[in-house]
Length: 140
Image (cartoon, rainbow, N blue to C red):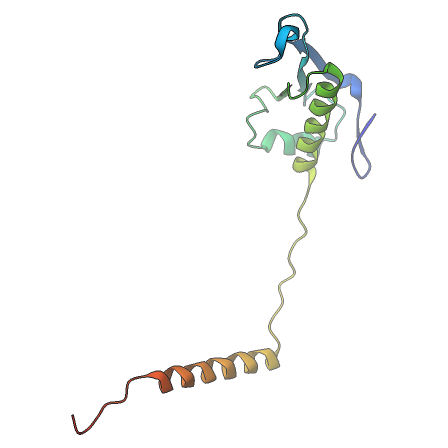
């Protein structure tokens, strides 16, 4: 079981892994070893709560297909184990992002004293600007 969030867990058996050859540089090893990982996670078949499934479907993420399958390709590392751990961590991050609910801002009002200070500061600033202005010379 993988810990996702608070009291939310994900069964590792619901994740399907496929080993593929990694792209890019890798030396002599690159053509022999399938070190990259394709992770597939079916949202609708998972044991996640319904609201979590709905939030994952609603994500505008390109890794979530129309069929509700999350596909993550991990090939950053040369070892299969590290790529597998990276793919799992990225899946958990995606689920956490969907489940996360930002705390609502409680609207507050400025105090009367702070309003007075603001108006006084504006008045003083206007006075400074007025004193900087050019003086009209009546003798021309």
